Length: 334
Ligand code: SAM
Ligand code: DTB
Ligand code: SF4
Image (cartoon, rainbow, N blue to C red; front, side, top):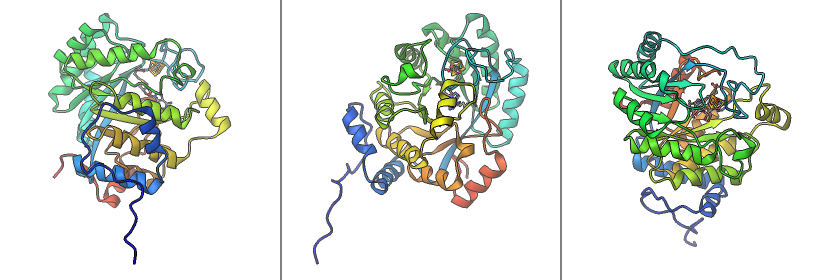
């Protein structure tokens, strides 16, 4: 009998993080046979993590709607009529009470999101009070407040902020189809300020906005060639919002195939092997089987609770049942 052939060529025995990825290499990963890609991603996943553990974050929209940016997917942009009711910045005490409830529900990280183009210095004291209050509960803290200056990043770090979420959203080539009120470089600059201030970065993007596979590869190429890979890498599946240009486009043209979402998760795991790869937005519309495939392909983080910022999540009951059925547990739990 002949010896089994090796197909495709062997992967490196140990997946050390690299920062010199070429776009062609990332595209070649996307093009692997599905089972080979998922196998490689699963192998890399367990080189760095316990594959039965999942990190749990909970979001709160601390300032909803009325945003000046024109992100073509977003329910909160004032450029589009999405029917969302805007509200002003929450009081710190209310945010801290919500964080306590999130902790009681099992969340490890609490992320405060604001529908802002950028953080204004006048809002900094209130935001700092929220962060220090949440941190005092023993939760990891995360915020996503739009663009930051270098000084603001230092101030947030001093208040007790562990993570800052700022997404690249898509590859540079598709970017102008998504948003025109800030540049790709603006996003990279904010990420630089976050790193320089000593905070951990949470940075990813959205798939299913009508982009090509090359655009998805280009996003992951950008993330994989950053000076430091993101500590958390959210892969959002577009939640199509009626009234937004991209939500309406996707409703008319059809949503991204689930297997392509799994491929994106797997390539994220291979390109950024030590990052927490999160199945972020859109999980409510995913079957249990699709989520299980994502975990197999290297996802190890989710948002829990009833909702993200303005869109629903599966919720505690369904998530607990899925974790139990998959034999998975919260990261760090006994
Ligand atoms: N305003 C801040 C900003 O954009 O940087 C922070 C909040 S913003 C809502 C955070 C991220 O949520 C966006 O960068 C985008 O990746 C994601 N997001 C927003 N709406 C989405 C949607 N409908 N579907 C999927 N992801 C979405
Ligand atoms: C991220 O990448 N996904 C989260 C978090 N960062 C802030 C936000 C998803 C928002 C989904 C749409 C909504 O709920 O409004
Ligand atoms: Fe504003 Fe953020 Fe929504 Fe863009 S994604 S419109 S910056 S809230």
